[in-house]
Length: 96
Image 1: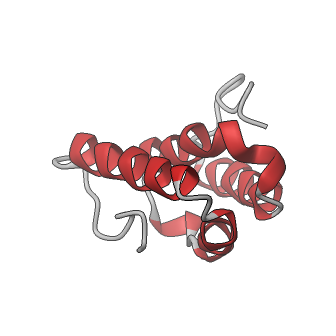
Image 2: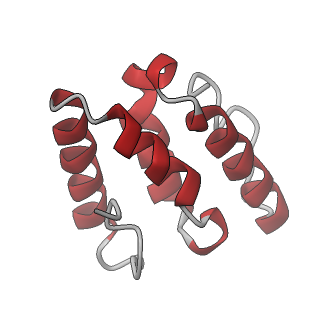
């Protein structure tokens, strides 16, 4: 499962976000924290729209204490958005 982050563009962001939330929710309900943790380490933040990156952070927020790779994912997201000029003040506030 790749969280449907590949090949997302502006025309299907809503559908991709729905899938992300559904897949993350399923993994969390099934207790698949290790699997989700591995996925967080593998997500190529530079190739993914900001909306989807924020979606992953939001969907995984309730389990942040059980996902050690989430902190590094958040740092990579911040750096990617900074590099792309998309990091606005407060954008990641509350997602840590």
